[in-house]
Length: 382
Image (cartoon, rainbow, N blue to C red):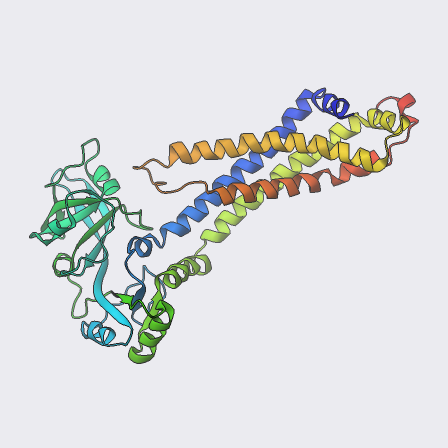
């Protein structure tokens, strides 16, 4: 019985190709856009994620997310250090700027100034040099991708110089920092060096990075900081989600991606529904013959859904494969999509969505199969 319905399916090769194309198109579009969306939202909080030793982020009460900086007085650092439950607290300077190579190549950059003594906040993934090299005069750490964009085609080399706001900066460390949301190059340096590179006025402290003592939960310590100082204090996870929620709520990014995903689902469903309906219509006499030989309506529905499942699996495999290839070859280390990928849970979610779309798209066709009369065997195709 199963072999009969499979032969019926592949006997209509043009229609099968149309069905597979519809499923593959929907799968590719939904998986690609979902992967890009998740990658973009992840990128928005990569600076927080790179500070692996930090439990708590402290900021001015007006700051809503990572990329909004309102400098605080330096004395706020000492107030935070005096809160019970704080193991240590260090300053962080954050600013957007631009850098220029001696050859004239200019890129936007994110400048992060970390604590002079502990250098807390520098990514743990060091590719060239030592973190202690940041204590040299005019020293900076640059991310690998930023180096490749500033000096394309050249090997990773220490000692390169940059013009940073008319000041000389020397590359002494190369890191593997995660890509930032709005900058091409990520630079880490000492706090005192950062404020010299980018003067900001009387208040210069962007954030305070803190660590809770081992016997206390970071959430409780963060609440204590807020209560005692009047500043906003969040755990790293809370601040990451706060940043992501800001972009979800206050930008057009979710609507843009949701529209494209919905369009892919609608177009894919339309193609599958119309093509499968044509396939069922052309094969009504064959379904009627199955009724003649005693196949029940329930079994007949199962056979039709089997045909749809075969088409769905083929289309899904092609579509998800193309989406994976897109991220493999488009998200290169020097491209704008670096760091983007296709997580397994997106692939699984897209598979479940496509399965639901196929079932919904075949519902209209199932009605025609159920009401197929055995006499159709003698009528020919209808």
